[in-house]
Image (cartoon, rainbow, N blue to C red; front, side):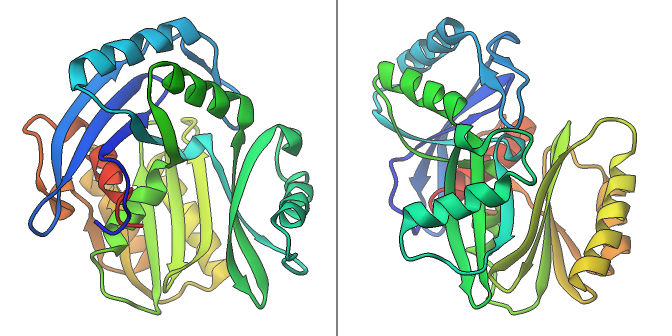
Length: 296
């Protein structure tokens, strides 16, 4: 495991919380412990960009039970659904020397695309290239993230990392893949949303998380995505496609292969961990993401 973090990871969603303890194996990570907790449907409420945490007392009760049942630990990495955090690749005129100035430029750019005042967002970014100037920006509602961190702190746990789940699945994949300069496509598919990302070598060209609203099937959404990517990014030669998610159907995997004319690899927990719990099939993707915390 390349990155040095405490072994405890929490994968959070609107209706569930999964605590994962990751250890070092001989070659790969080990899932030492994994336990899922259901969340009441009134804890999180729909919000613009990021859900709002509206029942703090109920969430605090879950955290108290979690600490009692999982032993002593005081630091955690938290992974949330990709749809909770907007990921934008932004082209700038230049990258300012000061971080504060760069953030101001990014917030100004987000005003054109975000349905919320950018001053209400927590923002982080990574400079992808300086010529041309391109950054990968992550933004989420500050009030929600701060409330989550405050409640963990009240339970005696310091949050040291808060990132999207899909990004860490990709970390888990690429840490085991050979270096390449060609294009690769990544799909992270959930029940109500999915993420599409395109990488040219190690550099992201495109990242988008979309909700599935029932108007179109997932296969139709994939076809639309393929058409857009071919036209806008000229992704005509794909080295590999990767698909992660729980219970992804064979028809979806086949559709991806047809649309992108490339081999498709379905990512499983066994690809990234040498020891896994026997009852992990319902949340394999989340446990895969937990291992990615240590490989990015």
